[in-house]
Length: 188
Image (tube, rainbow, N blue to C red; front, side, top):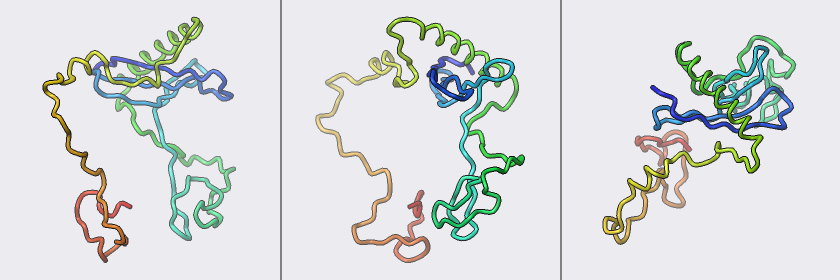
């Protein structure tokens, strides 16, 4: 597996140790976004994309972030959610991460090299970050585009992405008219 592209978005006015966000592309076909480049004691390091962990309210069962002082749904004071708890409880979980140190070092090396190059590019007049640019390769997209003679005159309308209920039908969490066993049924 090769890292084929790294895009960096510098965070110039960040008041904490966050220096940049970046995305990496593997084998020109798989992108991971929102890696962070953070100033550490031994120089910049790469932090994997993560999400804040949640817990459930003891009263109503609503999801709240860990250490939230009150429930966002019912307002009940949460146990252990006073915000000043500095215990070892984990607050974030990685969304994507390397499984071994060799892969972590490869990602770290490529990202930090590109970060340093991006810092140099930022000094040039007319600098623009490529981080938010579309990831489609325009040359490949143009080559794969059908010729005018291959395009049907009128395409059928796209199928809906979600199961749609006829108007007036209520959804119920269990039983009732909502006994659909298809994939994604009962999600909403």
